[in-house]
Amino acid sequence: MSAAAVDVAVRPLTAADLPVLERLEVELFGAGAWSAATLAEELTAPGRTYVGATLPDGALVGYAGLWFDGWDAQVMTVGTDVAHQGRGVGRAMLGALVDRAREVGAASVLLEVRVDNAPALHLYEALGFERLGRRRGYYQPENVDAWTMRLPLGPAAADAPGA
Image 1: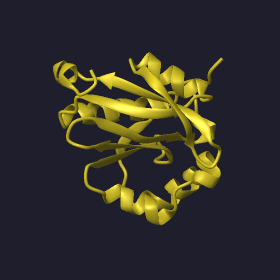
Image 2 (image 1 turned 90 degrees about the vertical axis):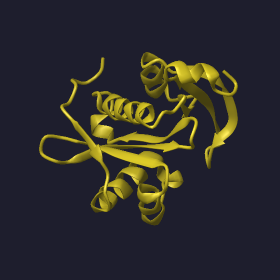
Image 3 (image 1 turned 135 degrees about the horizontal axis):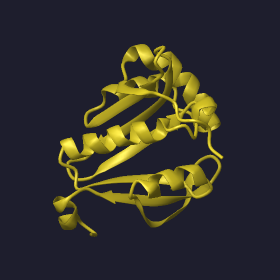
């Protein structure tokens, strides 16, 4: 049974969010966490869109990123504070990223997810993502496999390479 949904607003991330982002990175990804410097570079990198989910009191409880390469959009990360997982936060942020991918004219949205992350797989598949294949030893340092997944976005998606 999942926890009750939580009311969140999704907004662009800014440099002021870096202390919370760094804490969430360590909480969620441990040894694989990005440093504050890497996070700062990512927020302003060309082709990147990063959003955060905030509670009504303004607390940042999640973050997600998208990279657009001119054809496909790639979900860089979706991370939700442990206390708010399973409450619709990831869905809200992923919805904002998919909307952004449509805005920039992406043919599809791609992502990788750990094969043992059942909640994330369920979320992505419920939103229409399809499994393309399995990448061996993708996640480091754990050396865990990942599913590659794709969400086609409208008519342009039929013309995408490999479609």
